[in-house]
Length: 138
Image (cartoon, rainbow, N blue to C red):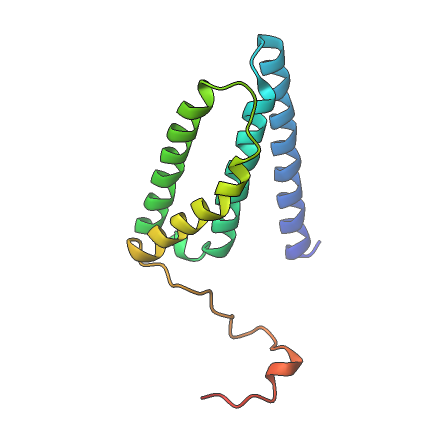
């Protein structure tokens, strides 16, 4: 097997294990009488916000300062939204309108305090788009 195929298989296996664990936790919460729809919505909100930031700034999170900031913001996200969601019934879908602003705030902290670059740069070994080939570099 090629190395890329093995890596793809590992990523797919991890994704399926994550989905199985999520359904397992949903079953346990349903059995315990906990409002699992609310916490499932919170899981999707957290995965949306922090997944997009993680995708965009994965290279920067190799730095210890950026990684610690990311984890600290994630813990603050859990604590604040968890405290808010405990007192209400059901998941308010309006929270997904807050997600872009929260993501922008996380990126702002990573760039401002963590020293992450503002933009991702293209790797040198990747091919350029056909439209970019005619452009002369500055």
